[in-house]
Image 1 (spheres, rainbow, N blue to C red):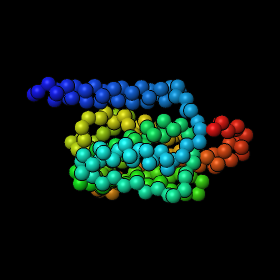
Image 2 (cartoon, rainbow, N blue to C red; image 1 turned 60 degrees about the horizontal axis):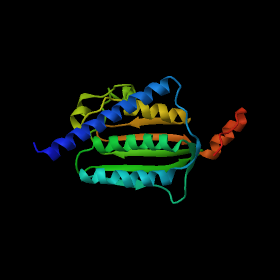
Image 3 (cartoon, rainbow, N blue to C red; image 1 turned 60 degrees about the vertical axis):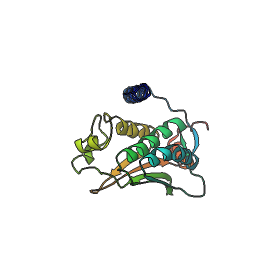
Image 4 (tube, rainbow, N blue to C red; image 1 turned 30 degrees about the horizontal axis):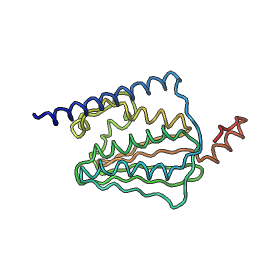
Length: 206
């Protein structure tokens, strides 16, 4: 083992441990009600374009095709840009991680009624029927998934669920044998403002 390889291995392990600690701290803070969102208008299509640009080299290393399918017009939600980026990065990285070489990953965005909808799909190993009801629980990770991916303690998806919930949204998963589809729904900025006005709650400043 040469020095450069050993140094790179140590750096990757340190980065991995840091991500685990950060995820665990985030889950703990959310559970204690200590996470405060910095709300403003977020341009979702712009956010997804930046995400795809950053994630595509990772997919290309695995000879995967990462496709971004978004509308020509912008989709605006009221949210914390950094936290929404964290949610989407987590889902896209999972899709890449659990999809074998030569596979396909799709990131799709659209508007359905008063919600922005983002779907992250892949044709990877999929999720077993037994695991689906538990997929958003802390430390939930089936054995087959561990064999197809390096590391992980089952913290990412619970964090995704909590952060989406803080935005007034929902996240769902579907998997039928092969491949998975995670769907995030967030209220559009104008729809959220209308709901707050009807309930007598002042909207957050943009």
